[in-house]
Amino acid sequence: MRKASFILIVLGSAAICCVAQPQPQPTIKDFIRVQSPVIALEHVRVIDGTGAAAKADQTIVISGGKITAIGNAGVVPVPADANRMDMTGYSALPGLVGMHDHLFYPSGGGLYHDMPYSFPRLYLALGVTTIRTTGSMEPYTDLEIKKAVDAGKIPGPKINATGPYMEGEGIPLLQLHQLTGPDDATRTVEYWVAEGARSFKVYNYLTRAELKAVVDTAHKHGIKVTGHLCSIGFREAAEIGIDDLEHGLTVDTEFHPDKKPDVCPNPNQAVAAAAKLEVTSEPIQTTIKTLIAKHVALTSTLPVFEQLVPSRPDVPQKALNMLSDEASKAYHANRELVAKNTQSPWPTMFQREMEFERAFVKAGGTLLAGLDPTGIGGVIAGFGDLREVELLAEAGFTPLESIKIATLNGAQFLGVDNQVGSLAPGKQADIMLVKGDPSSKIADIENVELVFKDGVGWDSKKLIDSAKGQVGVR
Image (cartoon, rainbow, N blue to C red; front, top):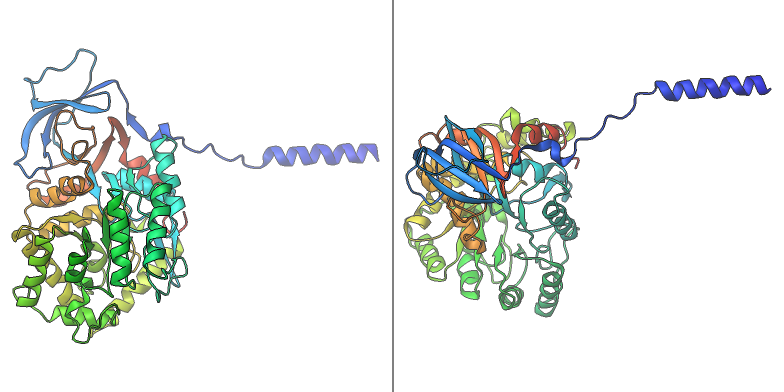
């Protein structure tokens, strides 16, 4: 018996030895390409985010996580101990400031799953160095992601964490608390301010009284409120004091012929009604004037609506590679449904939204940019942000204007433009380096290779590779 037992033990040990051992997981340091006390990016084209013309053959000096000098190559003094990097053929842009950049992804059945692993690294990999989460399904998760990024435990952007959706009765999403009135709205805002929320987003079904309570309470703490509205029209929200409105004309229900106060009409009917109006019409012009007079910004999220138009291109394969098999199948099935809907108002509405955003800015309005990774599942962190910049250019903005909307405008709205949003001495070294010249060919913005955040250079390819197949899972 002893001999048999001994043999079994030996065989068991041999079996254990022969099992493939788990491979060591990459650490955060494995994604860092450049980390030096002083760095000089030489012979780089600078697109500073202010809308100013690009400047060729520039040198950017980085020290202590900040930009210390920018100027003509060969003229700007480069410290002797600098890590000198020849960036000939590359453009330096400010890190994007994503203003509708959730940390969750649609999972079907009215549920959303947070993506604490894939989304933070994809935002950073594609040059988005600051995000506003603009509504949260799991606010504690978002706050913990922010803490982990700030502590250097995981790669990711700077995060302006939004509290939970401020929603009224009737929303068919089980993950959301439904407010019971203004007092509940006040209590909820106060609670989440204390927990660390620095923005709030109101949603489809709340009442004007609840919106006022949210706005008044948030403003008391110096915090801004944005909204994706349905029960409340844009003009009403502006009069109440909201700071920002998401998605633009596509969700403004005030043009629905049977719109009733505090009631969300059929969203598809509302879209169809708005699509029938020309942007030059009196109702839309009145809305634009009201928003500007009340200093209300608009957030453009063109990528999420593009995928509702059958004639628009599918999401590029390099982005779809991020999806899990299940998420990929769901996306393609959704696109097939879109193609079958011959009565859809979205082909008209998508173009109308572009016209609306252009008219809003021409009249003096402040436009922000984000991607909104929801919809039919093809809008993916980082990739969608770059697509948003391209679509702004397609809408009629110049490449330089499009970049400013996606960088400095967001930073100014968040009140952090003294730190990020443009390239200038004294600001944090949040810089995306792309091959080519997006100031003349906006599609070059997709060629992101290296992203600095606070002076640390992150390897885009390694971050992207680490997220392949993970969107929809974690």
